Length: 484
Image (cartoon, rainbow, N blue to C red; front, side):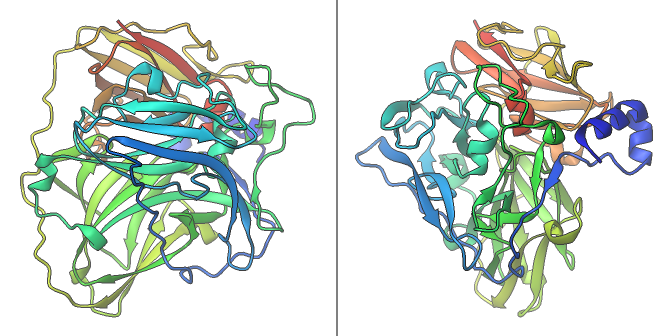
């Protein structure tokens, strides 16, 4: 079904009929690979290298192109932080102010956003705050005055976030603090950062993405836009990568493991489940530890969201194969990765009944509405407007909280820069168990209204909210707000 036909179909059906028709989980158009895909669970799970400071409080990373093996037997050119995909993991501590110097040796401009970071506006990765190609550089300052959490970083260039993240410009960042240190959670080799994304590959092993449309459609900066009409709902690939490896396998002991799950896909949503069975014990959300653990049989995760979970592999016999699957997909994309329980081992870890004392709710000073919708002219808009840089749709005051009412015509994972929020309600009812904790990204589903309580702590200045379906973002589904 073409994008335009599907869009019309969605609009006609409406929410209840859409769910009844079984189409409510569509969130992108599949772009198929042109090479023979590898068998799942034959490539070991890689763990990204941990970034090392060049001196206390200062990191330096160079964005450059490199050829690496992703699909066995072929090489792929990536655009990578440090020439790797994913980029290095930054393991940081609360309050230890750091500077990350990014040097751009690519042929395209970039802008780096620390997703989930409470950062000054000049270091937030605003889409027109570009680092010039061919050797340009910028210092990003991160005060890290925020709770321990699983963050990530990625390119945020105006009109071209989708293709540049697709080609490799993404990595993870972990913030730790004393509250987390005091917990008996799995550590070291039993703490696995898992960056999950989908990609398509061409016959020569290169990343397959969209060519600019023949009509010469340009983005709102006047440059050639990367999204054509058939993929305006978003691009999904048929190869699932975890830490840059296709359907990898990890050997584990029969003990508890902490899995830091990140959906770094452009558009694909996942509903993660363990097969042949098992439970995720959620200990954290986008923006830090929960007050108490929450058990899930499955986890829905939209682009940009993170879940911090513990899985107890002692529940499986030694020799078991435990597969992480995506129940929203069929075919190759249904598999994500596999764990093989290799042997027994001592385990002194635990998930305590009390995890943290997260910030409490603050009384909101106002309510604002933000409607994410495709216009009758075919543009992705917020409150009926495509993105206008420098024109804020809201001016919240620093230190206050507001209720933001998010409504949608399609799957729009809404990400708010700077502000963290609690999900208060979905369509006037209680939020889902998977909505627990302070977040920065929430999946707003077709014909749904989601109320969130957003806190504006940190800094005054210009920030933004946008759909984290990267093709929607590149087609102007963004808006500025100014903290005053």
